[in-house]
Image: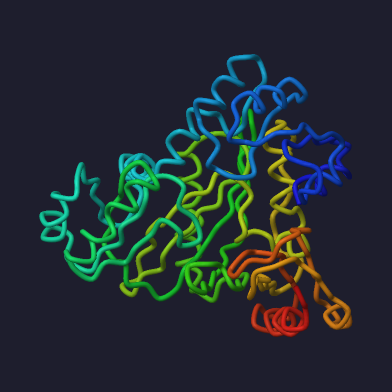
Length: 360
């Protein structure tokens, strides 16, 4: 989607990947390789003027080597090093005085009993690295659950972050675009609805009071500034039962919670990401209709993808986006549907109808 946003701006994008992967048919150039391979990252670094990322898991040391070779990496690798470690990320936000859940970083499983006494049960345990869409998380009702979950989480992510269990009314998200050289642009607040820790659907604007929306934007802007760097940052938040806004996590890239902006906003998050990393003026972020909504298309089986959108294409006002993934897996994001409407709820009804007709 970033590649698609680049073409109208006259920006040519080279991608690191393999033939047949979703972005390669649309790219101006393809460098064969894997983002886990430092040599492959150096190769693509030699082909581009600026290197940016579509996930936050690329080793920051590998990225620093690209930066040191003379190719700017945006967001900067030093910022990525902090954001991709959930414990460092939480500590940075807390140090900036931003609202986060109470947390602790155990050195070993033996620390969990004392942490449980301090924070209270239940607790959320998270792998410090490589966690997403519920992978790398465990909700633990008591010490026994925590001791059972700890080894696997620590092995997966090089350590564990422990957080208080947050009782929330709803989950919110805000996309913030930051420009290399200064300036930012904040998108309207969305409500995100999860299914098994995976984004299922969203409403924009979120159905919250103006004061809550203002606070969510303020917190998101400050969090993106604390993270630093250029491009889009997705800020996921909790709107708690006692009316607080708490930051859940940051994603230093265009985010699923901003995909509705393709049709829903004057400038999509993907275009503003490109503008931001290249130092171009940022585009307006306002909605172009009273309401927008998104429904993710999640895999419900394992096997080859054989998509059919014929019925969904007949739903007026719905926009189907398939990602071109060759294999379907249960819970895998295969695409999404967006819609605009006279209200967020009206848009969601349209998006749900079309999504129900897509065959993956």
